[in-house]
Length: 410
Image: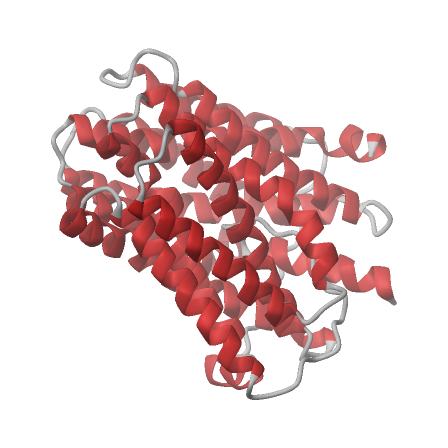
């Protein structure tokens, strides 16, 4: 691991700064939008816009990289992000913010693909697994650290918008000055969605549902917290707990999934999440209990996402896994577009508890569909392809993780 860090620290440092910058602006917009008097439904459009841009960016970025190269794409998208982040407080209008969030999602998607291809190509076959593990850990650390910065006393001014702009700008320095050549870029060919659904109906439906959970969870958590009357410090702790839970439970759930029917694990975890969400919606919980809810929610959502990819790959030969994963990630991103708007509508109708209620409904649907699929065919023999993947990772990173996992078995 020390050899990996010595070789890849410029790239990993840049990725961590990117995640800090992106993480703080996502939560900050929910808090600041509430102070500006935006309605819950208006803020839901602002939050959903990021996932729309991210989905479009995952399609367009590889074409841009092939046309002009990594360096130019990286510099152009990075400059645009820095500008976007300082425009938010200048024009506190929900429609302007929605347009800016589409651009931000597009830019971050392109930058992640560029950075991930760099990390994947700079590692050797012997160190790639460690490098990718370090990359996933750094992503989580960056997001958790971003929530700490929210406690700086400036949610009504400019400083907390300028700070992520500065961090994103600084992130390019270690990446662009790294003493490694820009790698060749090669993206996976997707399997058609019709074929993908025939291979794994549960994988396809599950990725759509978890996309809605993911975007509702991370897009609307700060909006829910502001409506609930939580302080900025409490909101930052709640959002941070979502990521801590995902980081803590990824390995034990992955270990269990390679030793049992993955569908039973998907069903059981989804049922637990649904029960916890409905209890959180029905009861008036103290803050420490809400942190526990966040730990459970994050600790289940992130591993279930990885489980669905691994379950689908159990039905595939190795040379089709990358294409299938790209299709699944697209479905997840498509589902993510509608999560914030549906959550916003639910919160407008029933109040802040609609946040937990909507997520609970999605997990109930996933648990029920997993039970139904268990009646339709026998479980496949697990291929051992479970690998911890962070929500929002690009198809490139997922492909590299799976490729390394298969290399370890061959």
